[in-house]
Structure formats: C-alpha cells, structure tokens
Image 1 (cartoon, protein in one colour):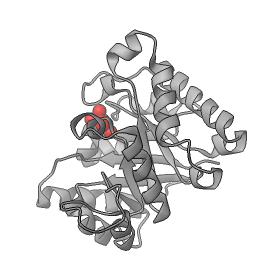
Image 2: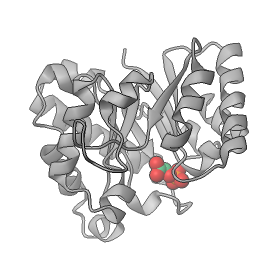
Image 3: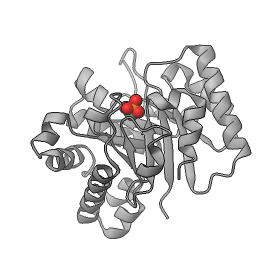
Image 4: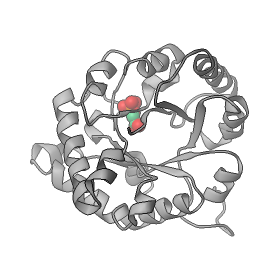
Length: 252
Ligand code: PGA
C-alpha cells in the first residue's frame, strides 16, 4: 500500500518563535495520535530546518526542505546541498514548485539535476507539476504535465523513481482560494499514474504517492483525499495554522 502524505510547505513565512511554536504543536499531535500509513512532513524555510529536525527527533514527524542546489558542493554562494540536508536528518525536498519555476527560472534541466542530486543523497524529492490557467482553458493541461514529468523525472531508472513523490499543483489553485474540484484532481492524478505505468510498470505506478496541492484546507481536504488516486496533500497557507494543518492530517 502506498504511503499517504500530508506535507506543509511554509514558503517564506514565519519568524523564529512562530516557527518554533508551529513545529511544537505538530510534534505534540504526532506524539499523541496513531498515524496509520500516513507520513506528516513539515517544510520550513532552510533557516529553521535544524529547529525542526531537533524537535522531530524520535517522533513520527518528518522534515523536508523547500529547495536544494542542483550542484553537489563547492563555490555556490548562498546554496544548500542535498548532502547537507541529509547530514541534518532532512528526509524530503520540494523540487519544481511553480514559484521556483516562475520567480527563479528553474528549467526542466535544472530540476532534473535537483532530482538526481537529492536521490543520490537519499533525500526524497517531492516533485511538483502543474499547469497555469490559460493552459487548462486551452485544454492543454494533460500535455503540460506530461512534458514536465518527461523532462525532469522520467529519465530516472525504476529503482530511483520508486523513491519519488509527485505533487500535482495546478498553478491557478495555488494561494488563490480556488481549489481544483475533486473530479479535476482525480482526473489528473489518474492520468499521472497512467503515465508512470506506461513509463515504468503498473506496480511502480500503484506504489507512487501523488499529492494534490493548491488551496487545500481543512474544509476541502476530505473530499479531495477521498479520491482513489489522491494520496494526500502539499499544503501552503493552511499549513501555517496548527489546527488547520492537523485537521487536514485527520482528513483521510
Ligand atoms: P496553497 O499552496 O495551499 O497556499 O495554495 C500550496 C503550495 O504552493 O504548495
């Protein structure tokens, strides 16, 4: 059975004390609740990763980064490597988020390199894909997603691909309050699983965790997660409030 995941992408939010408090609340929740086949991940800004790994130590809470360098190590001022993350006990990293694609011009090629370097150091990439509104309106959303997966993920060998999590995040739904309908999410997740089956095999496809992201909150999570191909969520805004985030975890 594939793992269900709720991951919080904090983006560039929270000051130190707020971050400390939020992680604390989530740690308390995972300590006192049985999480059946569900992984909970927090992805705070890099500056707070150590705080998160310290608090999450020996609990069921997992920690992820929001970004890594596509380079291994060396003279890349300001960057953080996959090896550094691994050495800090960080187990996941978000790769290919639409905000990184848009504001930091991350190309298909750079994203493929990030996926490679993460896997090399046993950090699980949470690989994001998603179409913008004009692409959906033009009926091109399936081909856009296929291209994003082809270019940055499908070069992987089956054994490596088995360690990847996919997040479908329609860009028009991110931070807008407009969520994909459960039908739209299921349709795309089913399509993505089909692509994985075609590229690798049915078993690999069945074992791939595919998350939904984009204005997912405690009110709509249950309906979204009820779909057979939706294995959880990558949560932005709603991950900043402990009660909201915990309610989402309880939505399976
Ligand atoms: P949102 O962001 O939940 O605030 O829409 C999701 C994301 O960007 O991962």
